[in-house]
Image (tube, rainbow, N blue to C red):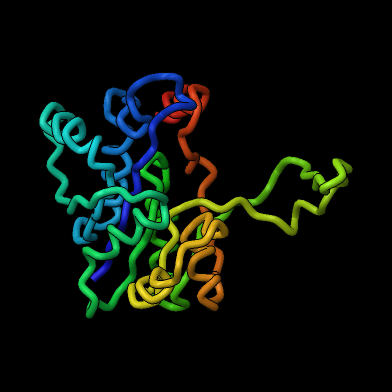
Length: 221
């Protein structure tokens, strides 16, 4: 059985409003609902675990009633950090389960079904995969002295989600003590000693963080 853990703990501060960014409407539908709909489109059998801070759950439930949102999911409480939020979601996956579990940002509603499929298919083979896209801008490295120099952009990739793993691998990796180097789930698994494979993402799979991102989202809709 396969799972997706959708992490939505943003406070929306960079959006400049009081409503957390995952609840803002895009094309009349809250961002988080669009994200969940995309994974349900990939597979109605995929088990969805939604991780939300306790303080946001009542508002989320009211949105679900308002929009008659009926995609099935399991709700988990958000943690102190993303790492701890994923731990809380992962705890709802039975320990003896085989399969693939993905972790996805709740504010990435435009991940393509094709990208999702590539991630799950590769994870079944290699155990750990992230979707990436090429860097198209020139990249410069800034050292500790403030001196910068150009680096070859073809050696770099921009990382997206869902990041997908063998369930047993991610559970074992998440038993490690937390450290500040855990910037995403791939870094947790890499710290555990497992190689990360790369698959093609899709450029529309942007993370909605700023008001400008929301304008882009409306254009994509």
